[in-house]
Image (cartoon, rainbow, N blue to C red; front, side):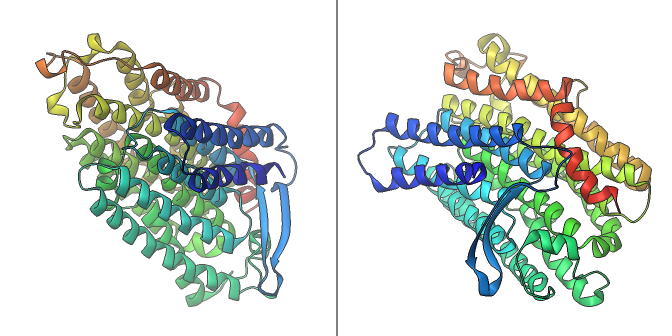
Length: 494
């Protein structure tokens, strides 16, 4: 029941905003913050009631929907799903609170934001494969309108490119889901049955084609190189809070989907192709970092770091899927990949919110037009420095914990991938230090003489996200306990 509350309240809030045209801007924002906050609170209650030593999937609810097809309203979480869903709800609440120009349409903006929260949480909470696809696909609709209506630059073009790319991935995903469904006797969309029975084990060409369709569809959403080209422009043209959701939540659907579908349901087939997936992850790590270093546009630079950081997550999954190496090392890599989803959401979400604050004050993302803001805006400087150092993997902050686990596991299984991937960390450090230098140090341009520091709503939101970043960096066991229980179930026994 608690998961149903987390899922339903944002959707009901969106319906309330869409159905009554007389809400004021203040009322619309309060409804959005309230609905998002209730959903977050429900997931925190679910977290507190989760037993890491209990069943793999907990808080399960199941109601028949289309019994003849094996479709049901099935919700439930393991440790990975619960951690990612809670982080996502926190980020949606932050996005609802954070100041943004709604262009005179606050009711529509917040309705779409709540709709996005409901369907996004549905991806992480569902245990029905068909519902997974429905929520996965509906998330494209909400993001299309949020970018296209409230973006800047060329928002309609960016929204269209985003939708076409990711919808193509969804169609591949649908074909793979049908393939999995037909391979099971009796037919069912129950994820737990597919995980338990592994119907395509030893399936030869058929299993390989289903796996390929799954991975291509999810790689577009992640995104992996060379399927990433929709991402940078979508980020540049989206409002700051929407970019935070795009990077912090939607990209996680790709990585989470790799864990929940091919890794969980096609373990034998994934093991066969794990080195190739790891090689693609290495390409994303190095390419994303190098291209980010060359960007003069702040948002485009942060967008390419997401390609780099999602590469770490996919590398950890490839290591976990391997048939080689010690199971403990593979479990460690999967735990690191799962934690990477959580910490990347907090860190990059904060960086994109900060980018939104800069845009609200200047209407400009070009790093060359900034400088000297450290004295002008000390709060903004402090939060940006913290998020940047967390993103480059500084010990004591959340990013280090996730990357260390991924690399520790990768060195034990695929050292030939782990060693060159270290270059990505070095390049990431260079690009973030260069970003900080160009934003906050040197001469203050005359155009920034009236630049104002963060308002209360901005520093409160960034303060909460920063608290999460520091807490996970200093005391990660509270989330690692949750993730290790799921990683053990997926990898420990193989």
